[in-house]
Image (cartoon, rainbow, N blue to C red; front, side, top):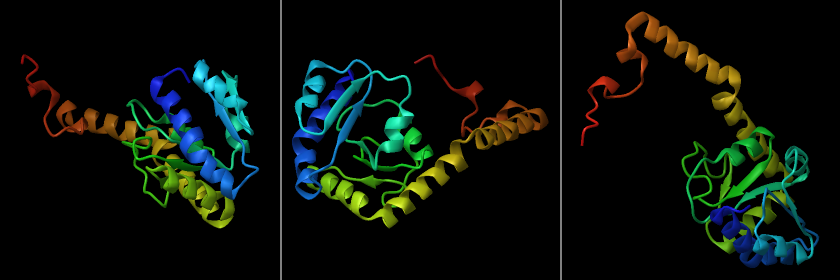
Length: 187
């Protein structure tokens, strides 16, 4: 929680999104889980129903107990592994477009994407209230992660690449349009 994009995401969510959710679902709670929360993030725990944990040994109980997993990132890059973790646990995810950037997800099928506070709040409330839709998104998200990123899927792709390499050499085993050996790195 000490990475600027995470801090910004939580401050934004609590200031601009959570009040709209609370207008519809007053009893809603929020668990902010992550190591080394900044003083500004720690202060969010003063709000009703907001818990800031800091580092935990195992995030799975927090993810399991959540109705919806939120990713309100507005800035930053990097990997999006936390979304995959939530999807693998069969959790419905509401994210900004930036939060899910680069992931092979379809809005409305694997996640709900929302880039402004009102839309984000509506998406969270919708998934809390419409358990059928939430269940469909959870199932599709989990199926996507298992199909593309489960060890058996990854091992199968590695095995295919190794077989291509053994049979045809490196040029056909590496799925690049330009073989690595001809890339000019001098400029």
